Image (cartoon, rainbow, N blue to C red; front, side):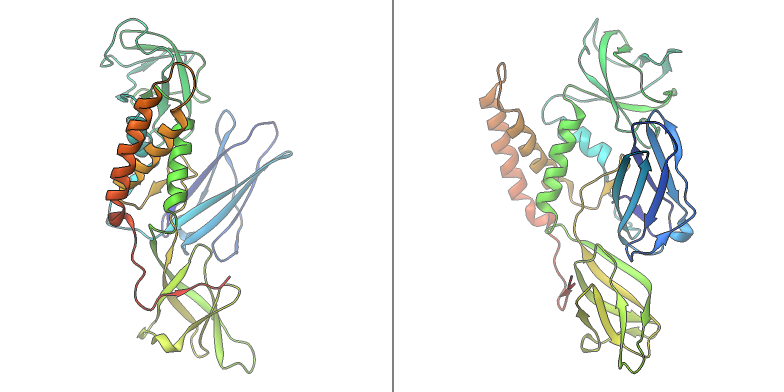
Length: 343
């Protein structure tokens, strides 16, 4: 989940090449959000922010970045604010990577002028302990470098010398991870696990103030169902809950309602969507997800020369047992009376 209704929605994209960047956005009802511009963050990374006043409908949004011949179409899932804490992609990365090897979490205390040396005096180890490890930057502290990584060329005490600097300057106080494994490999495992559980870990969504249109002479009004909804289980009006027999789905992601209504609130369900942004969060019970991601990770690592295949397979089987044993905590129940959205 990349954002919430009533809050700013920020989407970033990495665009190689030169020249200006054009950005367009469509909300989950297909409406164009105009007047947006891309902000350069450093290197080839750009960001666009949709103001909170315009983030009014949940579901699957689409943001398109264009730079010359390069185009990136980025889906952004917008949900409802929740009092239940959500696990961040950064924390998932650290947790899943720790299933493979120890993970160091720290805070950068100093940076060399050229950005190639990061200093954290609390870092354990001696000379060249962290060679070939990857430094990953926390996106909440540094969106320009968030979830990007750089390889450690040498280390001495708390000083890490990188093969190359990050695209944008790193400032002291930034949190980081030190991984033995490439973060891209871990992120692939996480996204595979999310895709596996997509239709099991259902996300509850409330779409307020959905307009109702009425054709001339029609006895039924039509409300559009936002993209990202898979089921509708309640329809509300200003007077309260609409009876189940007063509404019904129609092809084309439409909902038929009484014609005297001008707008409705839709309550429904959406799938768990793969995290696509450095700052993505997942509204899911983490134990099953971390365990299943570990299964994908160990399956991918159990090959090649110099690899302890048997140990990877042993860890894979343990992680699979944990994932299966905790799956019931992740599965979202479909409420009684829920109706599938018709494409």
